Length: 544
Image (tube, rainbow, N blue to C red):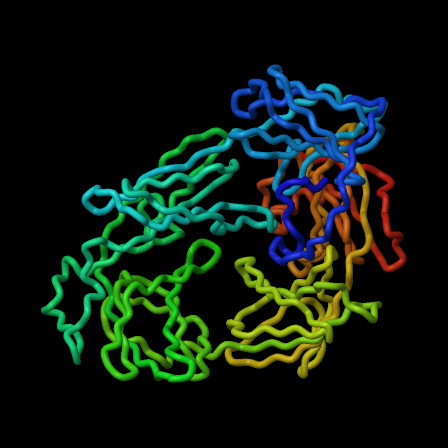
């Protein structure tokens, strides 16, 4: 079941969903069944006292009970028959649901044939990652900007994204807490306090190289733990519950760039400057131009940026930015204003197959090869537009209003095509008609091993031709009796697999799933399927 904490919205885990008001909370009435157990520290196994355990009905999330554990870590609830989620909270620990993985957890079943009275509820202590940022002579760097990244499989493949920032104090120290268990990376950025880069040039002219001490005309490149200046070379930091880890970063100065750029000055709209970016794992980050100096009419000098390879976006005559251009900036010189192709524009009308109206807050997204989604909302006329689209291949994805959709047809002036992959060429202007199909079927079943329900298994609904139908995957975690539910399934042919301890698998990658799919259960959902499709036989749990 989906956890009641850390809920990740649908649409490739990136598109925003509508926030729906919750009804007033109620108390779960007393019942004949007992849900009881011990809350323990996942690292030491010792019981946790004075922690709050909250139980909520799966059918009504606002119906709850709470219990504060005693010294022995015990908790106990008396409830009617049904399914219940458990969530624990304690200072110094990560709030968690029972057997939580990503946004999923295992619900406890209260019934006469399920033992729900001897639970072990493990809670991870918060981890702390700290360290110092030091310069080339071992002195602390104050006010350095720290960025924390985390590896995640929540989109079905391993991706690394930034999650939090921090800043060093006057001793060059930083601290990041609380941290969940996982694999992290960190980077630091700062400018040398002694750098002469960006000092004003003599009035009426450019600063001569002879006037600058080369040893002081330097900058610090963005530096990752492991003292790497490229994200691909960064050292990963595995973090487990309760860890107190130290990770120091050491800066090494490199020559500062001095780049001349000629920019038309527009009195009405001002000056549009180039944008410098660098690849950071599965995304790009903008590089701050620390010094900008006007040295003549329409002529500017950019400095304070370390030499290296950059993605540069030059301003177009319209004031917008051109497409990114990869440049190796190793010294001074001039930025070529002609570099980079113009970006593209996309306009589309949207309809849902079999419906004359569109759901509220429907969004269409463009997902690139790195899993990044740019999403815009469809207006009341059923139209959506994207500006500043960089050339490349994109998957069209859709969702909103608590529903999921799949793009089944895209029409343009060139004709209609099946599927949802779009190729955008530089400087193009596309007018599309997008047809969606909604997911309305819920598949329910049981995951079993040797005819016994298995809790905590990862359940994956794998579509036929998975590479072309990534948005049709569905996931769940089996509950205490082995039951699972896969909502919003779109008509099609699928295979359901149940994998024990499979939470770090790239679960949308065909090669990673191939050996499990061969032994999975086939199921077909069509337009005639009922709203709830119950499997007649259990899905066999496979070992990772």
